[in-house]
Image (tube, rainbow, N blue to C red):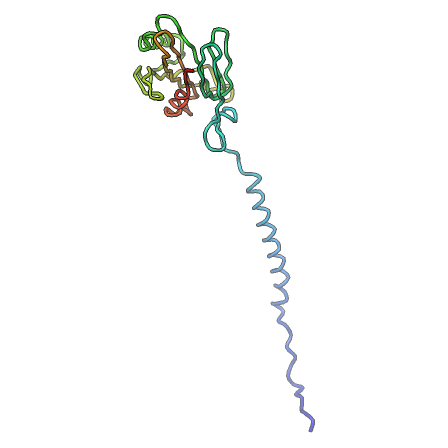
Length: 213
């Protein structure tokens, strides 16, 4: 017996709509993958850099978030300090680092005024009114503890010319400390920084690294 194969059943063809959108779907998938890869690369390359305070790389901070320091020992008066940059020593024994954002200036007095740091500080403070442009006293003369020693301190704001980048006044904050070795030797330590980066504890931290040897 032979099987009877019906001849009136039509052969099913894939629907035309399926064939028409399949190539388009493949093209779209490839395009989306390419776009995703491109956007990932541009996010890494085109990310804007963080804005700093205008100082050097050292002044804007090391990887741990704190500015690296430079150890300095004074050859004449035998003290050491961790400075925000390389100190330059003058013939009279004074020393200074003057960076674009931070400064450290140290003078040592050996005259009779060394015996009374508070009086010496008050006299210096009175003179700053006429020598520092836009002078303003923000922390009055007082006694503070630095490395376990009581020292005289005051803080002022002033303007040091014009910022060459912004064209605006270069506003500074200066904290000055009077650290005695004995009644005949007194160090005057002035730490200055641009006003928008000033941190009171940071200034005290710099002064606390000053040590007589």
